[in-house]
Image (cartoon, rainbow, N blue to C red; front, side, top):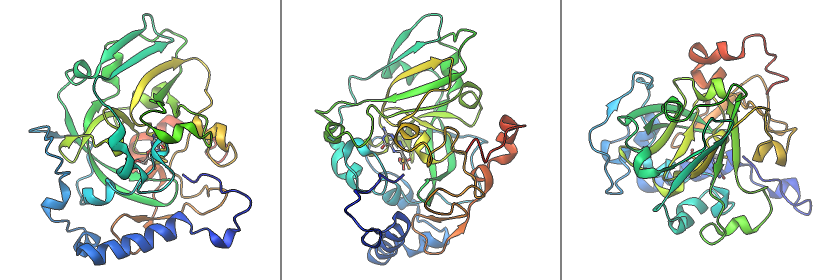
Length: 317
Ligand code: MTE
């Protein structure tokens, strides 16, 4: 995801995210000696988050990708977007320590029979937590394999009853200027709100994640609760969720409001539909040097393509 640059900056002065990522990852690999990760042989200690907040024994969900090594946590935890904490890829890691994740509650409202507010401690007891090793693809061209920890979104539907009008689900992130210094700047229309269709949300691959790499979710990755929808570009995965709202009409989202011509509502990973400013046909895995081909629906076509039967995905991008 790219915040538009001020017109006073010429195009040649801007390092594109993919070039920046490539340079930085290459240098990082050389520097910390984890070049082996580029060959998919990440040593086990690189794979754990090592925050000391282990979630204990976890079953690995059959929805997990089995043939790809997880990207080392060092890379996933230190290179990302969480614009409430700043515009740079390392801003989340540097600044998200300001986030207070306790007490935390999530309000579920809109087109539901009864609106409810759940404490995070209760949400954690909804279902046994499981590990979901998913391929993730950022709209900017980088990707990763992440062992998330969470439970299917559909667990929420056992606790609230959407009305017959509910067709879409919005996910609202916290927007507290005291903890999140960059929400004082209107470069996005805060709060960060993303949305998906209700049938996409209840698809078994869609999860609410509370951890990664076997541990409690690091703040920079969206503690204490975030959405993960692996066949869509990463920006659909709202972090640090405080509100889930069921609605009847397709809502505007933070990115469709910001650049409707660049970020469609669906945002399914699609190598055939380029972003207005770059191709989406290939991607660079964090920690790797060479690019690889991007797969339709990020490799999850078999599971999710039916959701879009009859739709022109060039129009509904
Ligand atoms: N959620 C919030 N609240 N704010 C953000 O800036 N960035 C999105 C998404 N969720 C973002 C967000 C984008 S653009 C990406 S690529 C992913 O978070 C990156 O985070 P991850 O690597 O932890 O998935």
